[in-house]
Image 1 (tube, one colour):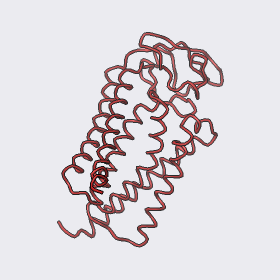
Image 2 (cartoon, rainbow, N blue to C red; image 1 turned 180 degrees about the vertical axis):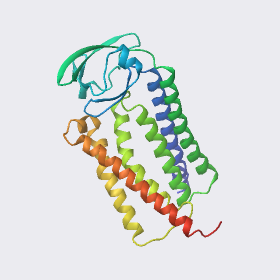
Image 3 (cartoon, rainbow, N blue to C red; image 1 turned 90 degrees about the horizontal axis):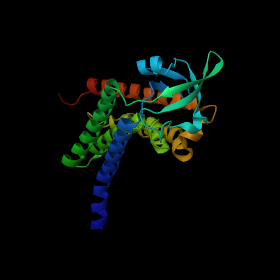
Image 4 (spheres, helix red, strand yellow; image 1 turned 60 degrees about the vertical axis):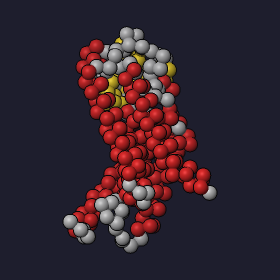
Length: 267
């Protein structure tokens, strides 16, 4: 029994170690992955953001829809440059103004601006990770500290896997999309106890409902994988619904904080 209790108390720190491994792995992938000038693109391959290198050196345009990379269809090509190095080139087939064209795309080392963006996200992930481990280490285990730890680890892991979801192995993208659904209910759950405990009618039913929706939305990514989900016609809608669900949860949190303020039990 004593051994079992000791293992259970150390389990959160095992989770924290796994999160830290993912953060380090994500950092390595992000800093070593060749840059093509594309800052973001949609699930269907439409380019949404470009930097000067992508626009002027690689002749890409906003709205270009990527069809294939070196002859491999988009859905099978992600991540694009697993075996490529800066200085090499690949051939993109894109659809522009209804016309299919082939573009040679040169790869380079990530620029200073991109590196700064990566560092900011990774530092933020480490801050979340450190706060969670610190609270768990120095505060007795109760609902508030346990939920805060879970919230910080989920946030850190989501930031790390989101950063490298398109450049790392498929599991990164699957974890990111699943956590996108889970983060909202965990945040609402935390703010039922922090900064003070709140009691309202059907609180348990509301939390169970939020977690159930998160499970229904996030589990397909873990079971089927993001690649399979992207092959479905409703993939973009599922991702959008996930974002809307997160926003609804955050609005709920704002309501809880206002309630806390109006019914504060101490200064």
